Length: 551
Image 1 (cartoon, rainbow, N blue to C red):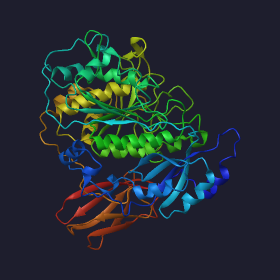
Image 2: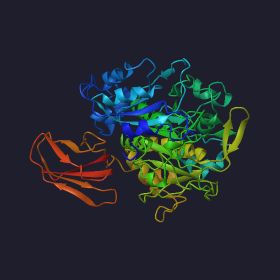
Image 3: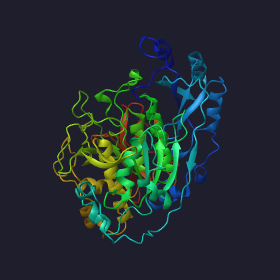
Image 4: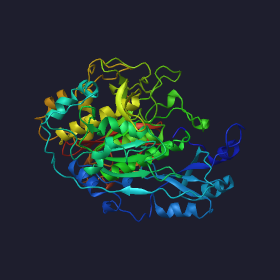
């Protein structure tokens, strides 16, 4: 990974700039998951029944990547000092982010045999004895569509133009309003959502399935910030004649991953943990109206445009994985289009996600909407939705409007849930591609609109009779992933004839005819860091693919 800082450099650089507060929080990279008490043969220990049902439905394998971080490793880090606190953990990245106010303890942490690298991520002061964040994860099983009013048209009130731009109202009229779908929202807080009359039907109908607060000194997502309330209103409110959101019948789960009090690199760690929680819950769609480019309170963590590559950021890598594990990932592009930065941020640069730009109800791009492409040349944003004068609910004022890709993202996310309800055989990756292909400029994408304004009803009509999905997540899983020196590929049927790796621009960079064994080892130490697509050719002429991140 480009931004890893070796311990010897880290210790010598903490106080270089007197204007920068001392680092107190660090991301610890772990080497393995050896001797973990968890097993891929017992996934119910770390994935919900809903998540397992989705894995079975789309043939998504349970792999070592899904195993939680070894709890013994966490304990060995904790016992080094009473002041050390585990703030968040990522099983996909195999990292743990800790609060460690005594930097002299870092040498001891680094000497642990399972620690590979340490990266400073924040300068929090957690000397106060804060309450432990509360968790409320009430999850319901998959249930059939039981809505009784799906054929009665809504009176969308003031919100009609923002759904009509996508022909989302026609999708609703066809009976698809998000029933049985789970949308997980990442944000900074949902002030008063639990007491606001506009959201009362969500609670009356049992559509709020739970909350999770990841910020160490907070324990209630319903206070601290209003951004999540405004965002959620564009999807979830059902107040006919005033505002009806894009997925009024969907179920919702709220995760605070954004610290409303400061802007520091550790928030990407929180984002990655939120992604893993969403996956474990069996989320269908996530909306994240969050993005990272610079960190006002932790400038040593700032990114450059060269880092907008889908690989450098831990949040971007987590977003890619989430999209590949059966979740439609909607990420706001950012509001830097008229600023010096200009480009999208993280994790909007991820692969296999929908990065959403902002336009007005006429489809004209907003000047503030962050632009593409990614540094490696991919089209971004993927799609564009309404983020100019978007009708929403403000906690303190009621009905109002707001501007930003933060509004465009959830308008699109709600319709993604409705479309997936309509096309349940499609995988998340396939559904996101269908949405791109329904864009107003799919054949001529640009750096402002991406593939354009999607027509969700046209996408439904085009694919309503496709039958069984032609695409499924590959059954081949490789480990470790991410990797550094080698990749191991299971070959249980002893039928793999050739392994190929392709770079992100489609170049063949490795071709290997392996010896027949139950596990094939591919050495990648000579390849540069980045994402690679692997292709496996078997004796039965079947071709399977996988993706791997080389650090």
